[in-house]
Image 1 (tube, rainbow, N blue to C red):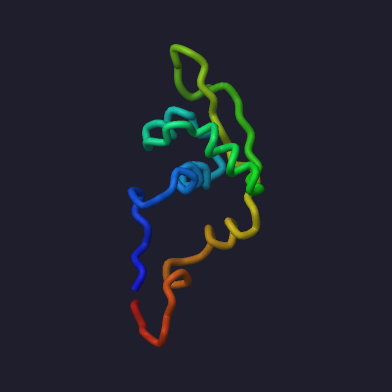
Image 2: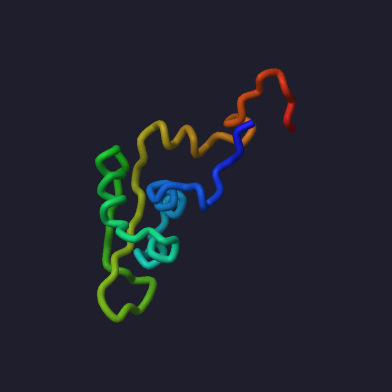
Length: 99
């Protein structure tokens, strides 16, 4: 049986998407707090994959320097399908009832 990914197993892109999935503004400092060393590259990679995002200067915190906040506006259809699935949808049944 395949186990669910923990936050330690997640890729840096997965961690970013986890933060952005609620389509609220997320400060770049939250990416760094999850050990994403260069979120700009990961955000660029996600945009190339079809994720539509926007940024603004952070209005949530008072930073010494300028920091950006990011918001997910639209995701590819494949992300939306996974986002709305339940755990039992993601586990292969193979005739075994896990729940």
